[in-house]
Each structure stands twice: as C-alpha cells, then as structure tokens.
Image: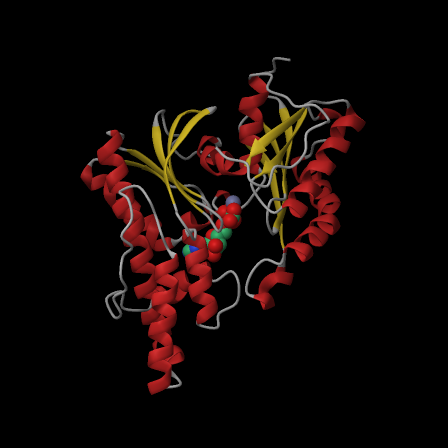
Length: 338
Ligand code: KG4
Ligand code: ZN
C-alpha cells in the first residue's frame, strides 16, 4: 500500500498514560491523553491499577481522538500501537485493542517501540525544525536514560545508557524522599526555579564516559536529609527550593557531561532531547545555550515530551511507508530494546 498521507490511529498504553492520536502523514490531527491520577498517593506507578485504568480509559480516549480529528473509523488506513518496552499489563490493553480494531476494520497493524517513538517525535510536522540525520538523542524518561545515534527513522544505535536508575526515576525518588507526590519531576522543576543550585553539592557517579548512574544520588540525598532533619525537623520544608535546585543541577550536570562526551566521540553536533524529563525547563534552557558552542539543538514541544500517542503515530507513518506491518499473532514485549 502506498499513500502519501495515510491516516493513522495510534495507541500508547505502556505506563500510566492512556493516549490515542490521529495523524495524517506526519501531521497530528488529534492527540488525547488520559493521565492516571490514581498513582499519586502511592509515590509511583502501581502496575495493577495502571492496567485497570487503561482498560477503563481506552475506548473513551480513542473515541475522543477520532472526534477531535474529525475522522471516521472508515477513513483510517492503519493502526499503530506501543508493543514495548513498558509494564506488561498496561501494554496488553493497547495491544489487544489495536489487534481487535485492525481485525474489525481489515486494516494493517503496526508495532512501535516506545523508546524509538520518543526520539522520532522530532519528526512530527508541527512547525518546529526537524533534525537531519544523523543526530544524537538523549532520551530521558521515567524508565530509561539513553544516548542514541539516530541514522534514519529505522536505524538507531544506543551508545550509552544508565546502569541503574533512569533520570526521571532520580527526580521522582528524590521527590518522594522529600514527601512530594508522584511524579515528582515537574515539582522539582517548579521549586528549583526559586532555589540556589549551589546550596547543597551532591557527588557525581564514577562510571564509563557514556554511562549514567543515578542510584548513588538518591542515596546521597537520603542520607543528607536524614542527617539534617535530625538537627532541624523542618529542614526539608525550610530549604525545599534550594534542595530541589541542587538536586536538579546535579542531574543536569551529569546529563550534559555525557552529552558532551557523546558529541566528542561521534563528531555529531546535532543534538536532540526526548522523553518525559525533556519537559524540564532548566534542561531545555541549558540545551538551547549550547548553540553558542556550535551545536544544533532540537527540543520537543511540551506535549510530545511525556508519553503520548502522537509519537507512536509518527513511527507508524514511517513503517507504513515501508509496508512494515505485523500480523495478529503479535503480543506485548515488556523488555523491548532499540
Ligand atoms: O516519558 P515519560 O512520560 O514516561 C516514561 O516513559 O517513563 O516520562 C516520565 C518521567 C517521570 O519520571 C517524570 O517525573 C519526568 O518524566 N518529568 C520531569 C518533568 N516532567 C516530567 N522531570 C523533570 N522535570 C520535568 N519538568
Ligand atoms: Zn515514555
């Protein structure tokens, strides 16, 4: 099948956001996201609750995406869905929905790797500059931290990743230690704006040039706060902004050091960020400043940073053009790799 501007329905359900999008070519007609508030009080995503919420949300979310796009089911040329990586129970809801939809309408089925989709969100036609190939991408989400050389929409190589926690996990775990609700990343970003990033220095990990490690930071913050709270029980509330600014600076310093190493090693100066943490305001402004050093930088629109189905749809578009379809025997792959 060859169509210049196929209409693709895309589904994302890998973690705690149920999302559906409709794309015409690489242009997004609608991108509906139902975020699950049920996890807030638990300080992290509860897999069992996430699957149930996806089950409840998926039909209304798809319905709303079709209505917003002004597209009827009969006009859809293919359905794309996240097959991994992610929480198995969450993924299965999206996979089962997509398979049934494809069978009912007799349209092709396209499987999408969630991490590739975060990166290829940069190819969405939304008026912002689209990177040429090859480019380097730092993908920073709640589950992953990777440096990827992107040679084409279908050819990517991971050149470095975390050996323990992901960057988003570091934000969330430190926030939890301070008593902030999940997800803590956006709150640390908010409080950090009012704090002094040099107030409390935290150590950097000793790992390979392109490797990341964040579990030590979490432990360092935990011990530091336990020590300070013994002296002053109100230490966290009295210093919240400074702690947030200092933790954020440490995480970003680590990310920039590794991006620097990757640019030096590959000679690629076209640098993009992707994934939930790329919504961080300080990361965005610090990356913008790198243009002064001759980097060409690409920062996704906010709505395409955290989990969304539009990014699944753009991968769907590229696979559609290559007739890269799957059959109904496809299932979820929780540990899918790039
Ligand atoms: O990509 P994403 O929505 O889901 C995964 O695939 O993991 O990323 C979610 C992560 C969470 O850890 C969240 O705290 C973090 O992205 N995040 C942020 C910000 N917005 C979301 N971290 C720092 N600053 C932000 N503004
Ligand atoms: Zn994600």
